[in-house]
Image (cartoon, rainbow, N blue to C red; front, side):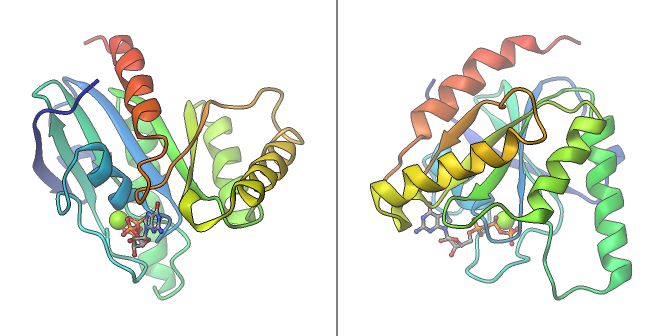
Length: 200
Ligand code: GTP
Ligand code: MG
């Protein structure tokens, strides 16, 4: 699939303010700074559609992008961002939990994981929570360009091993880099195949 037109539609504080749930939707979540906004830009062949930053905590709201006038891509704020108050964190968790569990047209949530790191508790717990709430998700390992081929292979194998300790089956997974564009076509193909699951 080729993304021909990608336009920013709206930033929402909670799911009730999101655009009408009338199109297939795919959302990106993961720790702050993992590369959600950058990957959205790469998928859309744009530099500045989703705002990125080298500092964590850039994306603060639920951002909807309309793709090819046909489906939605959603850039979500990152979790695990240390420099926020307890209150802000709770508000944030409510906003994200509401969106994820109640958004009817959400076909797949992509959980982004930094391929350089050993499995982190915060990500594993987040995926457990998704499982408990029967939210289907896929994993995207990001920043592959920052590792050698061997390191990458080892880290992904370690991650899958870890997941198999709590999951019977592994979710679909992708390895990406916005520098080399690795994984871009695979993610787009997956979206193309899965957007047909949308029904009003
Ligand atoms: P929040 O909005 O704060 O949650 O962060 P985010 O997950 O949207 O991360 P963002 O896309 O803003 O990227 C964070 C930093 O990582 C930026 O400096 C990006 O340039 C860098 N980055 C993202 N993806 C890649 C990648 O594939 N390779 C490399 N080398 N850098 C990346
Ligand atoms: Mg972001």
